Amino acid sequence: MKRYTSVLILALMIITPALAYRPLGTEDAGVAGKGVVQTEVGFDYLKWNDGKIERNLLWAPIYGLTDNLEVSAEIPYLFHANPDGTSPSGVGDINLVVKGLLADENEKSPAVAVKGVVKLDNGDYGSGLGSGDKDYSLFAVASKTLGRYMVHAQVGYTRVGKAQNAALRDIPLYGLAFDYSLTDAFHLLAEINGNRHPDSAATDDPRNWLMGITYKLSDKIILDLAGRGGLTKASPDWSLTTGLSATL
Image (cartoon, rainbow, N blue to C red; front, side):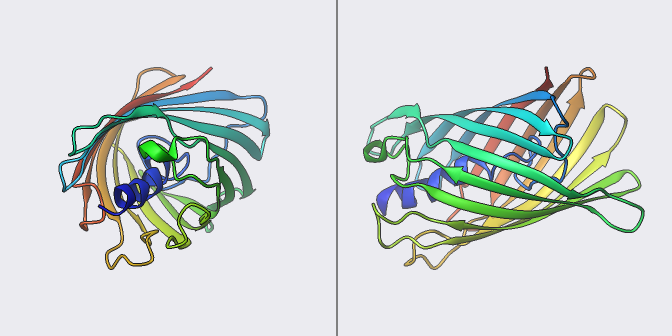
């Protein structure tokens, strides 16, 4: 299998693209706010078409530098169960993220933000826990309220490090997500996202759908649960994710 399916599509772009609010992978335009400390904790279970199983923990601390600018990190701990019987585990490549709000939402226009991500190369490349190179990503994001709906859209581009594997290529990314407020506490979510396969020889690109829920346990804690399915053979066959988001 080609280098663990191009190191599991570059570690699934670190367990869904960086720091949308859980459980979405599509980014929203919101920022934490000046002096606000938040954290997200999640667990993902993924099954690939070849029988490979992934169990991944993700911790994401977030801090608001100003009213319009936040910084964050995504720290994954990966558990692989390979078809050959090996089961490497350890800290995967860490993402460092800066996100800035460019324009607030108004009646006619969405909120607009940009996000920059640096993926480090700290994960063990030989065990399939990291890509072996640094990557650099830039995203443009828009969010709009439409009655009880929130709509989020993103486009992005990742410049992939190729020192370990010259056959890799850069990755355009996209996503569209919907958040429906059934009640003040209970929300329904849906999403489609995807990206170009990092392997330049691949003929199929990863695309996924998601259906999920969030429940506001208190003003400071939100719980989430979602299922994902692959729309192509380059994606995980299916996955489950659950976690929480907290304002500290």
